[in-house]
Image 1: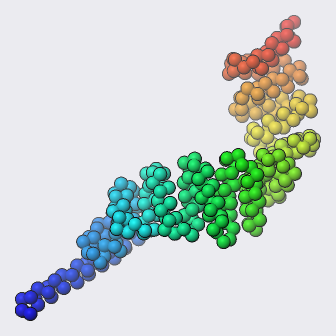
Image 2 (image 1 turned 90 degrees about the vertical axis):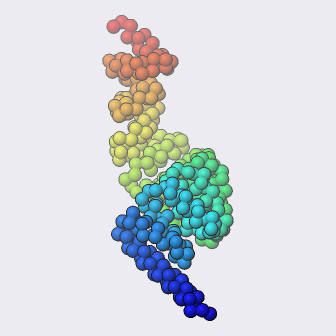
Image 3 (image 1 turned 45 degrees about the horizontal axis):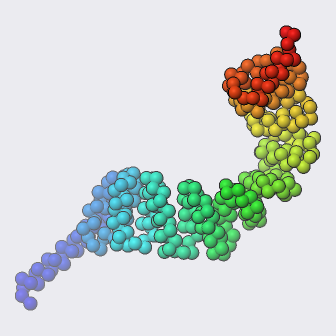
Length: 347
């Protein structure tokens, strides 16, 4: 071998060592800048490493991360797609691309990525949960249910998150019995079930017509958080349907006491007071509901009806004026107006 050839080989080897050393130094500087939050500077350093083959695979993901931190979504998407063409099963890069798509509002892209991630790691439950959430976001509830049901079957230990999402989906789809079964499972899995778990369990049972189980769930909710007015409100609903009117009224009163701004509680109490012919109390509660902005036609009707039953014609007249102004074509309110005129024709 000639001396010149040996010198050329050594020169090439030296250049490679120098480039490698420079790439390592730039990568270290990039990492330090990234840790300090100087993402622009970090990106500059990492870009200097891309011409070195041994460094590019290690550092290219940091280029994408810098772009994400700088909110350069289009550039980040482009570089991640390029990287994934070389490493299509790199789960970290796929997850980063899903994050970029999320920031761009590309839901179809996210769904496709998580399906690919599941193909790569079929046993990864978190991927299936995320996919289900994305499908829910797009209103694809049946596919979301299928995804979660499969996750539930392959998961060795019960996962409260899976059952909670499934239960919410079943409720949304009107499958109340299935939702109740999921919420029961959550409560059995958790040592300290949340108030919301008992609340939704009670709702699910209520929708199926299982009033005994619904009442039990709301009573558990009440014990878990005595200050939550919703337990009293729904106990009122359940017990009213069971025909225990006085007991239901007491629960409604407790709900109003705990949350005086709950229009639903005021209306429920007032409706029961009308049924019991306690028109003065009913009128007072409907007046509060109207004052808080609840001006639906049936609220006006019941308010005016209660006032007229108590022969408070002056207040009834004012309420009718407001109701007619908002709902000039409402037949029930107009019938009350005709009745009011008839009863006060001598004025």
